[in-house]
Image (tube, rainbow, N blue to C red; front, side, top):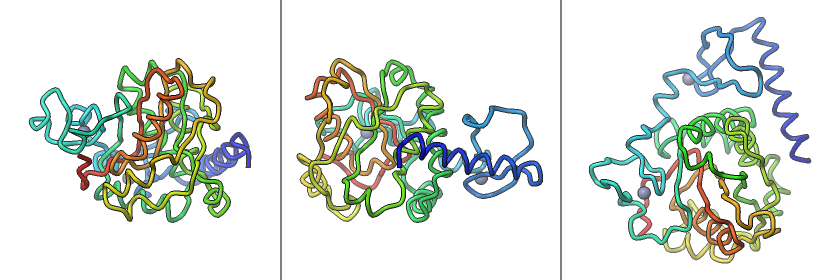
Length: 262
Ligand SMILES: [Zn+2]
Ligand SMILES: [Zn+2]
């Protein structure tokens, strides 16, 4: 399905939800608690998250590592990198993550991937977009690209959730999405099942830039759902830079904090 058609179908689901708002109050997408009535942003901008869910899943920006996005004790990385990314050769300049991959955030992402809930993906994207908009560097980006999925996985799975997340981000930050900028050169194993060294090996030579002219000289915002070890984002940033991209910034829903990447 074309990206525009896919977005219309997700927005259609949202429209249906809005229609139901006439009869039922809007619910939080995370915990289904009724949300207070508001005359806030129009459909296409609306964030359906209650304050409790936001508090549970969102990290504190002032406590986040600017390089990898993990929320850590800032006393342990004064002005530098946190222990998770220190020592790693990074090809991206900056990362923004909504939260750490733990607790309620982890539960919601498991739900997202298990049910292919596109409305949840769009809402997650808007939350990420809001977080990205708080930082100056992503504002200087020229375009959004997404971590690509191998064609076989696209064929087997009903949704391209990262694409829907990117649509949510785009609506908040006002950047165009270059949906076909990247492609997979090989089918990789699931990163979550591998050790850290195996993850880097797994994604080596796994991605290519489809049209270098599109990214040459540009500042690129790369969107993914979870940055676990940082291996995938780093490999993609590497090929983007090699293709001429001026800068790569990473935006993700969650940052894995259990695996050191040195
Ligand atoms: Zn909630
Ligand atoms: Zn870090």
